Length: 432
Image (cartoon, rainbow, N blue to C red; front, side, top):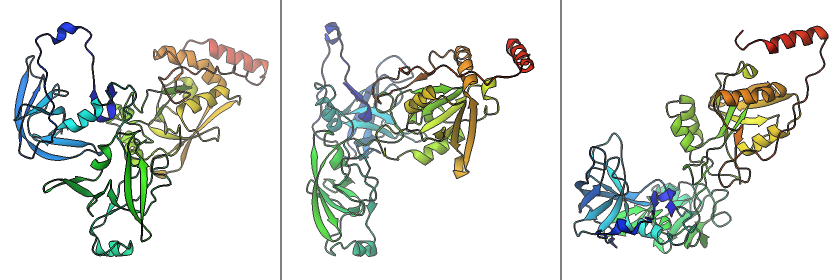
């Protein structure tokens, strides 16, 4: 079983001899408390033998997805990930996950409550869909007395957070509205700072109430204040869906389409990570990351780079720009672009790209026949097997386009002298 969003997986060892002489560890059923001693066990970099590091629980909060996490000061280094973290009682309190770069002794472990939620799905393939969500954006906290009065909150009530966005494809569409104030979830009152009680004097972000549920099967009750009146809604939880997918093998796939040496890809976090030092790519990240998917199959199609060839002279410096249209029609995803190019019968292939900073559009025009003739040479020169690898149905692994392009139309008839000159040019060795 694989749970990429929660960074967990269950591996099966086929040889039973592997388990001979091994002792199993027991999971703790409770969260460790602040300042509790913990021991990290693993095989990190720096040696081949088992490594043990010790520290204390520094903090308990949630990550960007709202999943519970535990911060410890015991050293967690590359190779520790997936190893057990034991409490003073000898029980497993979590799984080593990551550390914060450029910081001192800040490591994170996945607590056993998250681990057990994932393990509950291990025997049911496909039952773990991802991190549960209400399908709303970041809420607005309500510490301002004037704002609370304007939202018609009772003076004796000190909690609540305001909904700023409802995702178009999220589970809350039609149930929760922008401007609603969330008063409680599953009977737990939300503070005006967006926190809920964890235990004793500890508080944690309210998303913990949502992410501790199982997406695709669990429902939460949300009590709201809408235009001064209380409303209750039952929301069936599902994972968030983003315009810019985040994880290869989960919501992202290595799709591409090459047209006349122009390499098109969908904008995704794995692609951005590969081009982390490119300022243009960083600008795309800042502009589109965190934006919810607005319609099924929608992708941001990016011109990643141009594979230089005589058919695309003048465009070699273009890279990391968003495709606005092809032949004056908007393009929803890379597969749709590949099919549109395959079906195109016009003489020119016309692309428009959005310039950074809203500075108009960049126009690119290529000869369809020249691109068709250059395709085999470009692919061979760069050791590329196929002109495109896409998911036509939006699922599964990328594969070549099933629809074959029509043969390129011949160029308009030219004079005998022009034909002779063109033949001489085409027969000349490359580079002359």
